[in-house]
Image (tube, rainbow, N blue to C red):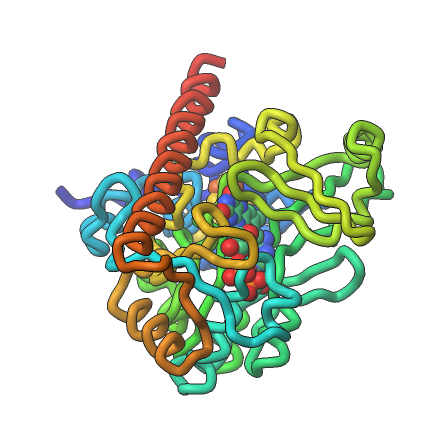
Length: 377
Ligand SMILES: Cc1cc2nc3c(=O)[nH]c(=O)nc-3n(C[C@H](O)[C@H](O)[C@H](O)COP(=O)(O)OP(=O)(O)OC[C@H]3O[C@@H](n4cnc5c(N)ncnc54)[C@H](O)[C@@H]3O)c2cc1C
Ligand code: SF4
Ligand code: SF4
Ligand code: SF4
């Protein structure tokens, strides 16, 4: 059946179905890739929420609607394209690994596999660079296009964003960074083979853009996905409350990691483990309805879950992912953690996969309940 122009959903529907339900993740994708971008149809308000600047300029093309991570209208097509299988999508292998470079491991969140794979792919000219997050101040990070190994290493680790300053009333502190917006800048620089590192919602948007041939998503040839249970967002008032409860200053947090629970490491060397229930209240509403933990559509998905400290769990999904992962391993850019026997290695890998599947189920169930609550509100 032919789609009539009046049936195409547009930004107005995003307002109804996403913003008004309180589940906009403020990724900025709808604004960055609006077909009427040059006409300034959309913009971001002071707290990062997308708004109509001039509704008359909207072309009603439906792109913003379809690429929004909260809209599942293209799920069927995407799953077909990737041969998705339950419960976590396709994959060829799983391993615990780490970078052989001490310089990378020193700054990485887990084993530095993400950064090591990117540096390997860059050196082999498999990519021209990667969209990652750059440190621009003690707590400020911004998405950037890194085109050399030192820029990639600068971007290693977990990042929090304070571009929305806490001291301004009503603004929020967030651990989410708007990586997808940076993809727009690939076009001006004529890149053809780029990588992107992102959370499942970000990779999902990139994959939908590729499905719809939205330029310049075709320049993204390698996607490295991060596992993701949730991101946090809180006000200055909540920050004070958290600091009192945890007896630490947020600015002293050097590293935040999520594995079986939330792990905070302070500059003073303390490690604090928090159960998910302790931080549920500051999880972003968008995250509470998000079903993807293992970054199902990435070429390689990486997380700390399932590996001991200092190692990254890598789920190698596609042929390209396998080529880069195996190449990096053979070139000794990464090294795998192996058991004393083949059998032990196999058991460890099965245990890691079981954890990923269990977190995936937990996250899907949380999303189901969250959506149900919204539907009955
Ligand atoms: C917000 C967030 C939530 C996570 N949740 C979980 C979880 O629940 N369970 C789990 O096992 N693992 C989770 N991870 C993944 C884990 O923290 C590590 O990033 C992963 O294991 C890779 O470690 P590494 O040492 O190999 O990466 P590194 O070599 O340190 O490289 C990390 C890369 O990720 C990029 N990056 C950092 N922060 C962000 C961000 N906010 N958005 C996009 N890109 C970013 C960096 O620029 C860098 O390129 C999460 C990561 C993030 C960023
Ligand atoms: S022009 Fe297209 S992408 Fe832009 S707001 Fe309208 S429907 Fe959305
Ligand atoms: S989640 Fe992202 S794409 Fe969807 S409405 Fe919010 S900012 Fe736009
Ligand atoms: S939980 Fe989902 S929406 Fe939230 S940052 Fe992670 S992938 Fe994105």
